[in-house]
Image (cartoon, rainbow, N blue to C red; front, side, top):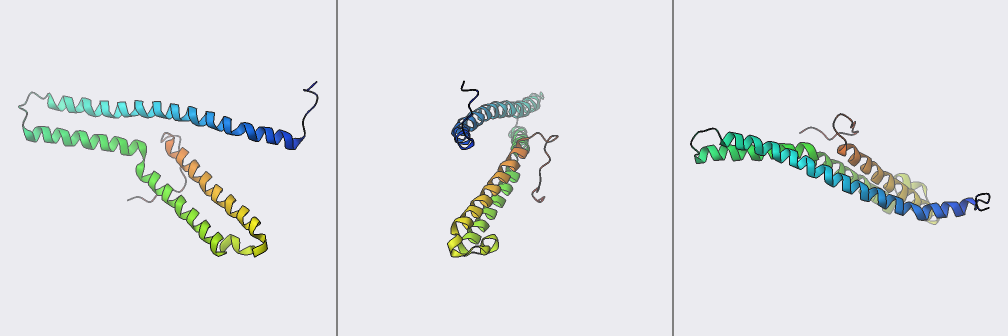
Length: 167
């Protein structure tokens, strides 16, 4: 009988809205778990490959001098640094986070001082201006999340927009 009777749309939306945080939390939990596993395995690959070449370089049959050990240690360090930098893309993450922070700060200033998109609203329309401000900030945050997801994609699948300048 209850299958034939549907609650009103606003009630269905309310029920749905109550379920969404649980769904989002489950997705985020699963995502963190798989990301942690992936990162651990990727780190093992980078460290393992660098350690293998290091051990091979140390097993050259020559006498170990401080110069040989220093060269091997520098090589290991540079190999690890290159691997982690290439995989985690720290520079790009920094660039995109700063870009988003600057854009949100610009929105705050526009709302506070009443210029830009918020200049069209009078003092009695503050709620509308606040709604526009909230929407624009959320748009910036969503764009940041999309860029973050693109950085997490393998190089052959990602097509990031707004690449940081080279240098």
